[in-house]
Amino acid sequence: MMDIVSFTEEVRESRDVSLWVSYMEIYNEQVNDLLDPSNTNLKIREDPTEGHYVSGLKSVRVSSVEDTHRILALGERSRHYR
Image (cartoon, rainbow, N blue to C red):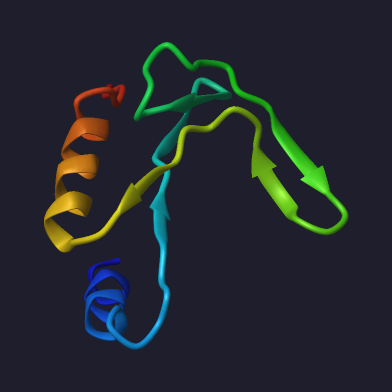
């Protein structure tokens, strides 16, 4: 992941690049959004052109490695651990 963020930082001046991050878990056969803890029991969908996706999963735009670390730390606080 950090390689992708670093690459977008390097080419930002010569290209228009946007990077979006989502963070989810599958726990007890339920898909939960770790960036929006109120978003639980989400559905996995399939679209002929888009492929598989999780309906209602929050996406956040990141522009640096620090942004990515912050988003991952936020999601980690919402994870379920046994």
